[in-house]
Image 1 (tube, rainbow, N blue to C red):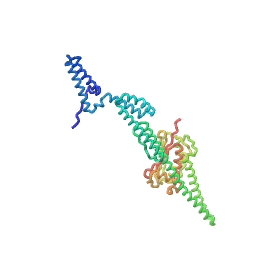
Image 2 (cartoon, rainbow, N blue to C red):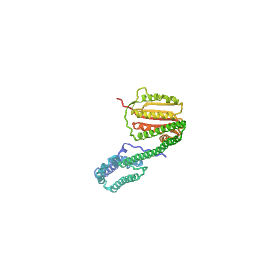
Image 3 (cartoon, rainbow, N blue to C red):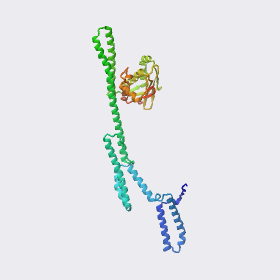
Image 4 (cartoon, rainbow, N blue to C red):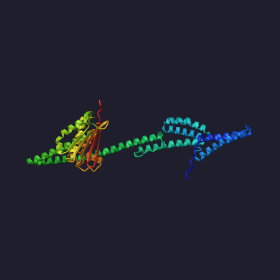
Length: 411
């Protein structure tokens, strides 16, 4: 059965504690009229007093049925607003403000509610215990984090300064964890880079030593000429590896001097494609350049930017599918200029971007037969020191590089 709906009228808006006081006053007035004051006229006033008293009693009955007898009192509403005000101050105010409020407010509350002193004392003790509990939770959490548990989260209830302090500590822990993870990954990549590039350097060096020993014992001019050709190839390969390794180290450390200037990125790309016309024809690749009709300028170092782009071109010539198309795009995206390079890989790219970038950085054997495998790593570092962003995406066999460069401000 549905609960019977209760309809409230104007008289029901009167606070219940005032209602009870009025009922008491009306009762006292009626009794006084009977006993002393209007003994001869009490019947005349009895009916209106009875009607008003009945309406007030019915209003109380409605609130009892609605379970709002206590909530619809003036004292309750005043205490509720005072509690909300104090709670708001405690949730958003400083510790100093709270201490002042406690020092001034608590004696006033005790004086105003001396008959409820045990209750107010209990509430004060409960609030104090909550704050102490929050403080201890933060203290224990900081101790765990100090001992190396960077995954620990400090949880504090409420919205006060302790909650804010816990959130700030959690953010610091998150930042510290990211920094530690990044440093561990960087050290791992450096170790792998040194190991693998050392292997790549040792291969041509071993060949050079072997052919030098053979050359010492060889008297046939034709064989000597062949040995010299091999030595020339291996020495050039060794020089390429050491130069790229040295440049990668300089770029990643940020020790390369940078001179930022106004660069016409479309002209730079057009000139680069023109200079590589012979390589483009030899590779049978079809280069497509899309760019805005108006001039687009970036804030970059011309030499370093060209070195980055040259590395990307070199990567395309080595690993792009022959006779496929290469798309180069220039796009204005607000405060930055986006330059994209897209090509279809001749190799299957069924790995993640991180693994792919690590393979380039490690100089993976299958991808470094024509170079050091450090081209993308160098390009990425050079773009970063020019305040740009270097991103790689892989979609099937589609290899995509996105370079975000700061736009040169309008004069």
